Image (cartoon, rainbow, N blue to C red; front, side, top):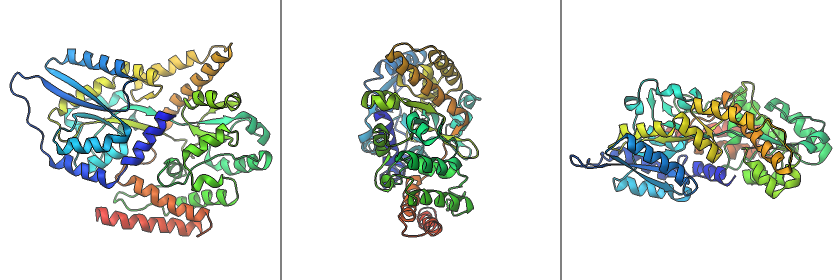
Length: 448
């Protein structure tokens, strides 16, 4: 959970702030640094985010293997902490020492790409390169005809549910679709005194609620960056959430506390389900063994289309790089089937490479299919089952909220107005209209 929370905070930090815009300007305006003289060793600078020291052996082994295949090029690996990546990348850009390959999330990468700060990789990728990856994940790293990112590792939330609370509420399993949630939330509240779910509306926290709007059929923006969410589907979605809150079927804290509060409530036995990753079970088994004993993994909540959300970490080549082709080749090497499978097994994440995903699913199915004897084996078996379910979720997953510039501003505007509707300050339709007006003012100032 700590690593997932760090990635979430990184997305929030860099999803569209002024520093990111400044960085993009620097990347686009600086020319490529001068190359080394004839016969000199070339250095490919590669940045990752918070992978050291846990994955030192893995990455150093891959780097050594790639260097043997590419004599004359040395990879200089730098691992950057989440908390300082913005400052370090800014400093590198204006010193004209930006990395040749860097690990970024889609919103920040898209922001840089929209300002000309990243290389279009189309010209340096071999024919058919996209075929190795999950199509929806590959497409998340493109803008128009340009491919600005190569996908690396993924995470997909599933539902963890308290079976004891489900049974008391009259359910054998949690709801699978959002349309089933109101009846479920009411039954849990009436029959157990607890809450069915927690989805935060704190503007700078989780994007989960924005993702639910997309699952409910809401188009967020049109091709001109203007608000498209003030629509019949948008009105239904705003009414859905404001009604749940006003009826007392959501914890009061959803308007004031973030995703961490959902974890606390679940661990205390006060929440029937939570959307999270498989490794949550490991922490739960340590922090709340009683709740862990009655917890089971289930498929995530979805809309009518059945699509789930996936979070992606990408590899991108800054415009400033003098080794764009080599950076892309190294990225393809890192994300090849065998290399992604090894990383997925070590880091307990999901691969974007199709071959690696198939092999991971097969491995997890065997590991999770045996009979559990000792308590430790039963706990491990449950984690394996959750990981398999998370991997299977990728078959119908995509990045639900487009990685477009300003997406964190969009989230803040939508959440702020939805809060007003939940608290009864305005009607849900009026709140939605106000959110559209607020966003369009921002869009006109930014894009004209």
